[in-house]
Image 1 (cartoon, rainbow, N blue to C red):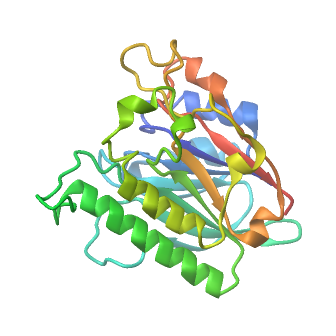
Image 2 (image 1 turned 90 degrees about the vertical axis):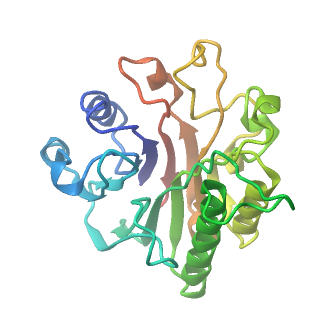
Length: 269
């Protein structure tokens, strides 16, 4: 089963580029981020014509996540547990059934966290964007713990807005102090991994030069000044079925691209 994550940076802007990639790459499932559309305005028919079931959790002009699946989706839920007051559309779950095994799909768009607002003692300012990011990561870890306790096969994939290591940025020195690269963010990332989750791309590829995002500014794409912030985390059961993980880098050079590119896994399911 080929499962991709793709921050499309607006469905209206990617109305031609996304279907073109689907026709070429032929993923079974796509976890989308930043659809930037309310549910009723999402162009479902374009994807249904290609054989995809469509589930979205949208928000006007900002955020928004969704799932495209050629296989039936079961038990779809929207919103990350742990904070009933959180109205941002950043998380969706569904179960997809393969030939021999089902897997719980957790699609996420983790908060960026900038600007980083710190109190005099160095702690994140309560109510600030960085504090929200860190609290969201705590909630994500709690959800992963629940799924592990239930022995539910699952994966968590999407735009994490986390640069895990210096080798995941072309110029790591320029990211010092940024919410994507701060020590507190790295600590929360490691806390997720330490539950026993596997980062799929690094399980298959080592070394620098692998990126999933290039800014639109300053010729970042042409100069290959990228960062790797789109990730798959797999529970042990799902990790045992990992066949491959790749980044579809080339589509960043196509017409009207997103600033992100798809990352995908092949799972023996």
